[in-house]
Image (tube, one colour):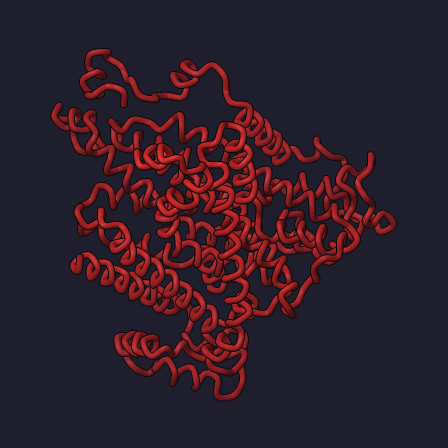
Length: 305
Length: 297
């Protein structure tokens, strides 16, 4: 068990180290001097000197690389040369609206998926057919178009929710629903499959024989089996919510990490994009690793293999 | 696998008892399910619109008639007109060209790179397999939209660059499938037999291994192209790909955002086109997956 945990942790560290190295290599692979690459179209007195000092450009490549890794380990993500302040400050000031959005969307997606899967799994052809058509529709719809449809119906026709901004909980509803539905489609597919497998298990017959009602059986006994495969999707879930936040924030004019990232891409503010990408990879890998380790405790069968 | 020893049965019957070629499978199954027929018809129409858009509509997607701006759908303009009086139906039809071709291009980028790395990983010893598999791990450690945005920051904006950016994000999907497929096929009986019969490595690779690895490609390619089309439309919506007045679906949606309050049609129809296209590809892909998985025995 301990060995498995250590192997898992080491391979995650390896992936993170490779991801950081890949971004470093990508910057150095670009044609032109690194000062020019990082500065983009900007130029003000002292900029190139500042970049050269920060990246240690007068040292050897090996020194630059180790310096880069040490900086990352200290949580120093560099400086935005467009906004002329440390990237950590830029992101820190914008992180809250994105966290709100991602958490709300994640919870909503889970709630929808659990409800749909519990109600439809193994219940005749028609309910499954309807559920799978809905899942197909939601997973095939671009996030921003879903947002537009919701805006047309709920904001312009019925005036239930504000059109944009980030003031109050009402402005959170539409972006969260928009971001949640495609995710809910995927989660519901996985969960229903798992539920159907669990419903075939002998213990279900035992519980039914005790006279437990169908809904109570599903909610209290079968659901926890169906949740396990979903837990492994946790890393993917966080990643897709973070990625989807870029488009959702743009769509609804919300402030947040997504908007910062998009502006940085537009102005070729490489340090900011680099930081966001590495941060997202870190969160994704860290969560997947934690879940995998937690899995070893939750499901003892994994240890015997 | 109905028989306890499929290889033995294969020898006895003298033919393949598994799914086999599309023709054999179609013979076994008389009718296509209605969803698959609808998808094939829809995609066929789309390809027709892509090749000969001028036969589908006589409007020019770029010509604006200012007096006709924001007309709701009617007999003259089936999908209405946009803010500067261009026919939305014509723009959706001409847009098929951009959206489908960019999606196809990025799928081909993922396919080409994923295939090379996947086959190398599946055939090689662990010194080849480990690094290649780590490449897939690293690429999939980044959320795909962010990875694409990162690549666009490097390469700059534009049609070709977003196709590459989306393609790079799709590499691990292909790579992992091709890798496990290659590992299955190289252990399959017909490959072992071919080696035993004394065929050279090159002959075994090109005659037996490669065709059976490639037989899995149409399935993943069909499923992936839908994801690629969504990703591409997202990047164009963000303004990183084709620029207005290009009638690309994502660009049209971005433009229609300003008139959302007064007109629903400029945004509903391009979005519907994306969604239906993606649904069609995914229905077709899942059908292919169920029926034509190819031989791994």
